[in-house]
Length: 401
Image (cartoon, rainbow, N blue to C red; front, side, top):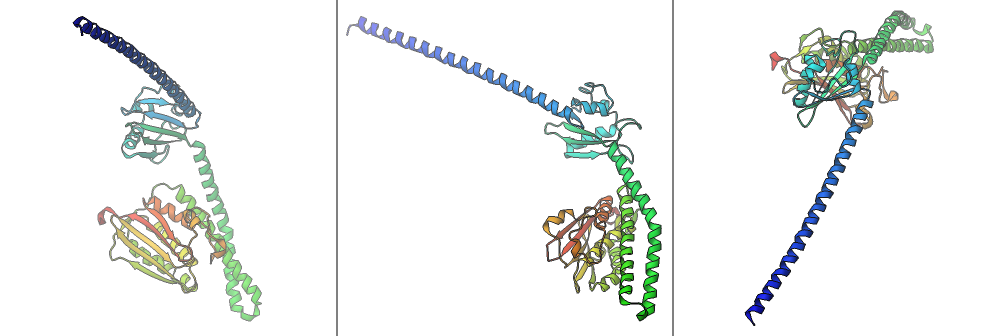
């Protein structure tokens, strides 16, 4: 082939390749521009959706009845709803950008925010008894809760509980007044019933058996009413009492023995045997000995009521780590699974028809409040038909750790 022809063919091929490459590059560039435009459109759409979500979030936050404040990692406020401004008596919108101490003007609130960022969640309340007040003495009673956020900041919730506290106070005063008003006539009725019962017993066959039985029932039912009034008053005082005032160095093992002996006669009348299984020198706890004795008496009394004739109730005390654990076990009817989580509620009874000796439904609620006031916890393990074990744990006193 002629060299000139070969050169022409090569140039033609090169020209075709160049044109094809140019068209390919242009198509690639066009696709790239289209992809960029689509990406920009998607980004714009995402921004619009994000802005809409933020507006919706802000709207929902403003519609809630509680104050909501968002604090960033530098402890500066980046969001605060209308309710938060109102509770803090601040001009709407003035809190954003301020530090927590500038906004709340209370070092303790800054401290619970810092703790929430470390521990996850902290709660503190306002007004009396070492609580946090976010406004002056004449301002509302506000509960302040903080929860740490994943970015190092925190969410702060402020809730006005002024009306709730007022109603709680009214309830406590009502129960207190009612209890005192009922005690005098009930004491008189109880004494008269007891006198009638003794006279009926002394008279023997001179009193008809039906009348003697009715006198005995009056005495028993009056005792139940007196017990309810006393427990209502106890519960009201415990719920509104705050911290434990009388701190003793309590020997829980000895207290378990004393509480068991108090109820031994009652148990014998019911045909139930009482046992104490206390570890030697398990330690002591700091607290109110009378209140802790009340817890044990309530638990033992319940165990006896729910035990069958010939049954056994065992009171145990042992130490596990830095806790003393007291337990009361019975081999009675047990608790249905659906009721286990409710037995510590006030006035709740698992099955009134199966309770021997009556009851008010307040004993376990009182026990829960007393244990929690001592920094402890209380729980129950039960299987229907196989008995129950009520236990509570208290921190061991420092001197005995």
